[in-house]
Structures are given as C-alpha cells and as structure tokens.
Amino acid sequence: MSSIMVPLHNHTIYSALDGCATPSEYFNICAERGYPAVAMTEHGNMASVPDAYLASKDTNVKYIVGIEAYYNDHELRRREIEKSGVSMRSLSDEDKSKYLRHRHLTILCKNMTGYRNLLKLRSVASECRFYRKARVALDLLNQYKDGLIILSGCANGPLSFDIMRYIKATKRGLESDGLQAANDLARRFKGVFGDDYYIELQMPGIEDDIDLFRHLVMIARSLDIKTVITNDAHYISESGYELQRLMMAVDQNTTIDDDNLFISDSSSGYFKTRGQLRDTFRQAYENDAIGLDTFEQSCDNTIEIADKCEVFKPNTDLKLPHIDNADAVLIGLVARALKEKNLGGEYIERAKFELDRINEKEFAPYFLICREIVRQSTEVLGMPVGPRGSAGGSLVCYLIGIHSIDPIKFKLDFNRFLSSSRGGRMLTVNMQEDEIIK
Image (cartoon, rainbow, N blue to C red):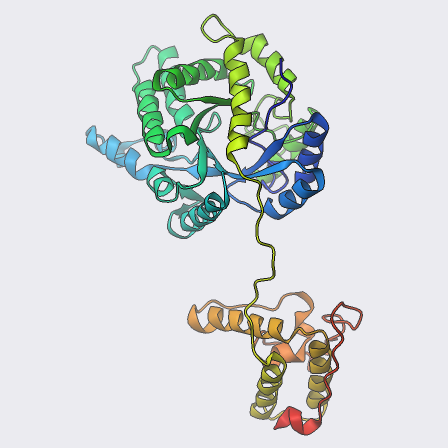
C-alpha cells in the first residue's frame, strides 16, 4: 500500500489563534515524507502565501495555494425558509444560527488564473458580502470558477451541515430534509465545477462524524463525484493539541478549563501520515459498504488534484510605477512646501540633509508613491492616515503630506527612519540652498 499522498487542508500560524505550525514546518515534513505537494488553506485569508512560496522553493515540494473560505448562502436559505411559510423573524436564535452561520469550504488554485480569481473572490467577499466574515456563495464562486478546485469542506462545511441536520433529527425520531438538501447542493456544485468538485472526507473523531463520513461517501457514489481524504491539520504533532486549546481560549476570551470553550474534543488535528490516517479509518470508519479501497482511492485522489495544479510561479519583479525625474519632482514638492509654510533656517538645512540621503538611496520614487497613496486615501476616499513607526522623524514626509507631524518641533530623529547604513546605490545629490527654496 502506498505511503504517499498530498495534504490538501492545512492551517498555519496565519489562521490566527487556530494554527500552531509555520508554513516551513509543513513543507519540511512533507519533504521528509516524500510528499510531492502540500496546500495551505487558512481561515478566510491568504496571508501565508509569501512564506509558503519561499518554503516551497527551499524544499522543492509543490505549493498549492488555497483558502478555507466562509460559505454562506443566506439569501438562498432565507428564500427556502420563507417559501415554506415560516417567517425568519419567528425563528429562535438557535434555529437562525443553524441556517445563517458561516460554513467552511476548501478552495484550491490549479494555476495562475485560479490564483487571480481567488484573489478577486476574496476581495469581493470582503468588500460586498462581509458580515462578521468575508462570505462567498455558489453564485460568486460560479463567477470566478476558472482555475479553481472546490472541496466540499470539513464537518462545518455546507454539505456536511445538511447531512448533520438529518443525522441529529433522525436520532430524535424526527423527519428532516437534510439529506435531500445535501444531495441537491452537491449536484449544484458539480454542475458548476464538474470534475473539479470533490467531496471532502475527514476523520476528526468527533460526535456523529462516522455517520457523516458514510453519508458523504454515499452521496459521492450516487452523483459520481470523487472523494478526497483530508486531515484538516492545525498542528504538526499530537502534542500540539494543548497549544491549540490555549490559543482557542485566548481567541474566545476564556480559559482552557471552561466547559463552554469551543474546540474539537479530539486531538486528531495533527499532521498525520497516510499510514496513520489508514489506521484511523480501519478503527472506526470502515464497514461492509465502505471498504479500504474507498480510503485508498480517496488518498490517491489527493495526488490527482496535485497533478492538476501547476507549479506556483508568481511574478516577483518589482512593480512600482515609473516616475520620470523623481529626484527633481521630490525636491520641487519640498521646496514649494517650505515656501508655502514660510519655513527657513533649520528647516531648510534639515530638508537638504534628508533629500540628500533619500536621493543617495534612490528612494525618491518610493516617497512619491507613498504620497499619492496617502493623497488618494485622505482627499479622494476621505479616510484618515496616521504615521507609521519612525516615519514621523522625516521632515520630507511632513512637507509632502505623508504625515502631519513636524519632526523638528518634536525633536524626532531622521536617522532612525533612514540611516546611512541602509542599502542603496549611493548616488550623491548636491543641492544648494537656492535649489531648495526656489
């Protein structure tokens, strides 16, 4: 039996207060195990992309860009509820949360088209569909589907949610449309993504997850959708569970011994090998209808997905706007500001000193770009901008409008902001006083 697979659902420290490992740790252990690729899927963000990309280059393990998105088809649910003759206002808070809570959906990029679409998807979800989280739904996914692979999600995924509704209702002897709703949802996703939609199987060791696992397999078989095993890793080794409990307690502003602490009651969220996952499957999830062949094929499908994904090669060239005669433009702006503010003496000497240093380092374009960003924010969008760190020590920044702190008045040092030891092509700029104030 093969020992190779591709972990497709993993959280790092960039899943804030929910992931304990760095991207490098995942890539290093994948290299040790001989895994050809690995995906990083942070909660609602793509902040780990730079570190993961560099770790991929260091280890020669393919990096699959991904995200665990927050899925919420609120409008569809609302219409379904009201169509049944029930008003949303009449629902209890518990029932509302069951329908309106954000579900998790795993999204992976096949290529740079998919990467750009995922960036756009994330931006639109933040700008236009934000409610506590940046939310996506099937209509938005359909709009930006090119180059993307969709996994149905964890136990809190939209597909699993409907199945769990059915399981819990059945236990209580009640009727439920959850299983039919799950089938309908899987069918809609397949209609949009075709063979790039996979039903995600996990074995987290939590209540009802064995029944959930088996229902997911049955739906996949009935709709001819491939299944894929993921581990939803949040830490590297089993001992990391205690650290994750601590982080989750911090996130929820409580203590680790709080009975209401929301966390998985299983320590299975570590980065398991294919052999360890196989053992877990055999211990609890295997039965007469779902044999070992289902597990092995689901693991092999992780490799199939990785083969669909191109090597991530972003263009890392510097993409700053070109500004003709940036040195002269910056000098002109400073000179005009000094004249308008009727500043002389110490201010002129300080401006000459700073401009000399800035132009030595060829940083004039950077200052002009920052000035334009601040101008767009404050004058066009009406959004205030404050100084960042030691930038408050720059008179040039003050004069051209990057910040509003007079560093001479408050005795702030420019060298702390831009020292002579900082790298740059030391191009000397000689200026006379009349060049500054003309």
